[in-house]
Amino acid sequence: MRNLPLPARESDRSDLLRAIKTYRYGGRVLGYTATSQELDAILALYDRYDADRAAPCEAMKGGAFPTALTDAVHDAFESTQQGRKLHSIRKTLFSGVDLCPICGIGPVVELDHYLPRSVFKPLAIYARNLVPMCHACNLAKLAGFGDQDEQEQRFLHAYFDALPDVSFLSADVSIRDGGLVVEFGIDEGVGLPDGYARRLEHQITELGLNARYRSEVNTYITSHAIALHLQHATGGGGAVCAFLRLQARYETGAFYRNHWRPTLLAALAIHDEFTDGGFAAVLPVPRDMLDDMAGEHWA
Image 1 (tube, rainbow, N blue to C red):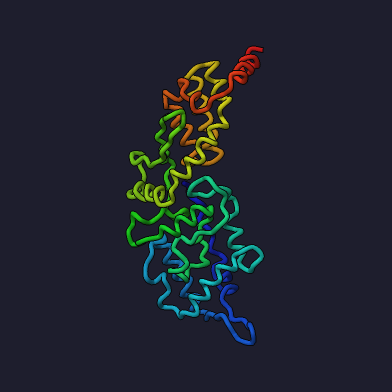
Image 2: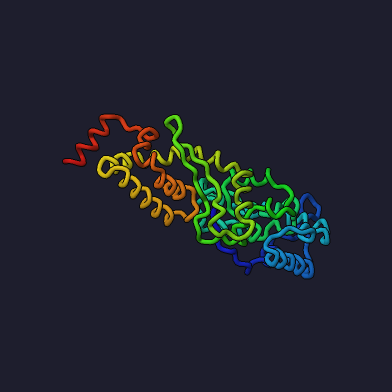
């Protein structure tokens, strides 16, 4: 869960001009040509979106505009696809964003409309209403879009809802039946802005993030199996703890503070059962490999 840089607005009018125009097809004139006044009105709606920090309202649904105009803006989003006339919007928003800013698992492959395109048609190609996401998060968010007038039901906006530089993502760790069980949540005691903790918890629930993280955790921690066994063999639980903390620091820099990986590592570092040898039940290593490790260490 992270913020993204606020997109620039220099191309707003030119994007609209390219998107909304009439054309001939099958001998008929289709599409729509917006007047200068209509373009100004849409840009004013963008200004309101920014000022209200993307809070939904009736005006943003475009009821004051001709239906042909809002339909034309709505349909123009398809032109952001590869090779089409508005692809520059998608290319700019994807630039520098590798992993989904919501889950930190999958690559960004889609643009999510923070306020849904089907309802808020005038915002369909507004860059600040478009958030790069993975397919799973975008699909789950769309399915869970409900009463956006309820503040606590509104997802945090990757551009407008600034997250403080504190570790608010937490991981509750336990070892059960030889497996690692992890439940991620939000730490309400770290100084988040009012209402953010509830909204973040809502995101975790609506997007099914814990189920998705569970499918990643054991695969990921397996990559540290040999290192954990070596650390324990040479320095016991203290060495395992120090390794996990150092790895968490490294992955915080490689990803970001509230990415699930460094959060998991930090939680494991303070889990005495895990660091004192419990990791071996979760990450068993064959005896011959342990002997080889010992031989390599003492050689």
